Structure formats: structure tokens, C-alpha cells
Image (cartoon, rainbow over all chains, first blue to last red):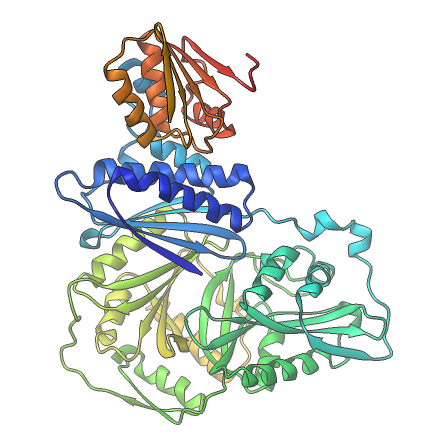
Length: 480
Length: 99
């Protein structure tokens, strides 16, 4: 959940705001020391804004407090005078000899949080992000290796039931036993995070147990935060119990649960190290709509030949809401492939014509989600403004400095300017990724991507015909 | 913020954090006072920031004896980050009444 504060740039707001951030940190699981570090970093940041951002006019700044299962992120945005923290580096020698403490606040911030990012957005102002990770106990801290490796023997029968908070430890053990440390969604190794996600309604799922009550299968849907769709994102079947129809049982139950809950669709991010997940998705009516390059860091998959490179995923989508026809502004360079993807979903698309698309106003609205662990960033365009090209360029600049390996941007297909935006992004080095159906605010988006590491396409394995077509298209575009 | 003076000494007990707003209030007090010793009780603080450390450093540079009582954990950490631990001439830290 995001908490948004709008604060006047006055000394009087510093202490109440710092108190609030401290309590917020404690509430979300930080220790007193960690909460004090986060509150101090925040104090340094807003003190700097109050003192220096607005010298002549009365200003205000906004603060977004964003919590996830594993981290707390504070985004501070202001429209004050131009400033770059990189140019204000603290020097103890200057402090001692000249009494010059310039840059001391930013030095403190860098040491007290796990990530500190500055994004200069031109006319749209400046954005500072500070991130503190929440240190939950890992499953290996809760059980011995011997306990964790205990594999349930063959069962006479299996029982399936909806997941509850009481299942959290069993799920984390199941993941560890089946995948070791290689499961890409790290939250699954932390029972506290599983409990939190279930409690907050961020996911729902099923668990399969043997007749002796041992957990041997788990499958969950993670709810999208800005659309009525969910990701079939967490799945595991204990090695000795594979091939017994457990996966099929769980997938059927999940689709039924999703329909009962009124979801518009389900999607899967199937890895391309192998095609097993893609085949399962296809069997249940999922259709491939995109190929996302280098979405996960490299991980070893036992039994599969895999080059040491970042892992790409196929987006497979299962519509749960009937849509026969949609109208969209398809960029010329991608209209053919997008039509084919829509057709494969059983949707007839009308490509709306537009002569000279222009943005609506001066400022673009682009949200930015950074996954620091995966070193990826997803931008979602909410509104096009005249500053679109420079905004993207500035975001890219900040992300590159932070060492981000993959940047993905979603363009709304119901906005005429998307036709032109695709060309602008192409010039920035982005290539096609695919269609993201109903992905944000119930609308379809074109995803484009920019990867900072070379990938060997021979090790990107796709199953469906459409995924193969998308892969060829991307490869051709990269080489052109 | 509570405070009292005794000869050339100023004693302050902060009720909240030791940050810029607190520094501004203390500076106002000091405007009318000549002191040679400054004691601040931080038992109620959870945050000490670089503005506070800078303030103490300037007092120290002016040859005012600085005593910090019951600072929160972050105080030591900030001195460490800013590499100022060994740069004070007259700083003493008192924890729970023990020097």
C-alpha cells in the first residue's frame, strides 16, 4: 500500500514527518535500530529540501511511502531548484579544516539505507528514492538442514485446500527442499513474508498435502497491484511426488478460484531455460503475448543446459473476461505482430488511424518500479506530455548509473501518441517485447525493453508458435 | 526541550530528536549566552542527524566542552560515517550516568 504525503517546505514539518516514518518502519517489521536508520536518512533528505530546494518561493514536496514484502521504499519528489547530490560529496578534511559540511547529509543517507537513487526529471522536478530492506528470518534460520531435506514418502492419496497463514512455514520448506537456493522469488524463503502477503490479500493459492498431512504441492496467484488480473507466479511440487497429477489439480483449482473472485485474466511469467512451464500454461489455454528478455538474474536450473546469462520469460495470458474486439493505436512498426498476438487471444483488433499524434500536455506521467535485487526497472506511461523523450532519457540515465540490467516500459495502446512513442523509444535503444493484456488499469499495453547485457538467443527456449514468432521478431529488430 | 544554566554551563534535555529543528532552537538559546560547557541529554531521541553533529563540532571547535548524555545508537554511527570520531577535542559521551 502506498501512503502519500504532501508537505510544505517548512522546518515545522520535519519532526512530525520523521516521527511518522519511524513508526511506519517499525510497523512494517524493521527493528528499532533499522527504523532509526531509515528515519535519520529521511530526516537528512527532507532537511536538505527544506533548507535548499526553495530559496525564494514557498514550495512543497511530496512523499510516497511504499511497502512491499521485502523492503520499504520512500520516494520524495520536489520541484525546487536544480541540484545534483553527486556534485556535493562530503569530505572530512573540508569539514575539519574549513567547517564545510557540504554533502554530509547525502553521505549519511548512502550509509544508512540499502539503496539511494536520485532522478533528475527536468521540468518535472527531482526524485529521491531511499530503500531499506526488511530482514525477516530465512527458512534456513528456522530449521536445520536435516529437517529441511526431509522428503515425504509416497502417498496413498492427496488433499488440496486453499492456502492459509498457517501453511507459510511448510511452503517455505517445500520451496527450499525442491529448489535449493535457485527459486527466483526470494520472498518464498521467508515464512513471515508469505504470511504478510496472504494477510494483505496480495495472493491466494492452494496447497496439496499427503494423507499424512505433509505438504507436497503449492501454487498461488499473485494479484496485480494496478489491474484486476493475477499472476500464476509461485508453483512447486515436491520431487518425489511429481507426475502424480498434482500440478493439474492445482492449476484447475486456481483457475476456478480466479473466476470465482471475478478476475479479468491470469498470466504466467514462464522461464525460457526450459519449456515445461510454458507447456503447462498452453495446456490450460494460456496464450503467449510477450517475451521479456533478461527479466531475472542468472540462476542454475538443475538438469537443463543453460548459458550463464540473465533469464528471459514468456508472458502467457489466460483471458477470463470475454473480449471479441478491441480498438487500439498500434505503432506502424509493430502493428502486424500485435495483430497476430491479439488474434491468437481470440480478439479482433481495430487499428485506429491518427495523422500527427501529439502529447496531451507539457508533463508526462510515468511511474517507475525498480526491482533492486533483480536489477530491473519497469516504467508505465500513464500520460504523455511534451517532455516524454527527455523524461525517458533522464530516467534511463539514472537507472544506468545504478547498474540496472533491464528496463521495460509499458505504453498504453488506447493513447494515440503510443504510435509515435514507440519510434522515440526505438531511438533510445528499446526493442519490442510484446502485448501486456489488461496489465494496468484494465487496459492493454505495448511493452518495449532495453537490455544492457548481450543474450544468446539459442538458450532462450520457447514453446508456442506465437512465442517463437515474437522471439524471431525481437531478434531481427535487435540485429537491424 | 528543557534547559537550565549553571555559571558557564548550559544543560539541555531534548524531548524529541536531535536534528535541524532542535539545533535551531538551541542556537537561539546560545545567542544570548556565553558558555564554556554544553551538556545535552538525548535519552528521548531516536534520530541524530548531520546537522546536529555539525553543531556539536562547531561548539567543540570554539573550545566549548561538549557532553552528550545517553545518545541513541545512531549518534555513534553518524560520527563513524562522517569520520569525525577522533576529530573532536572535547567531546565526552555519558551513558546511563556512567562516564
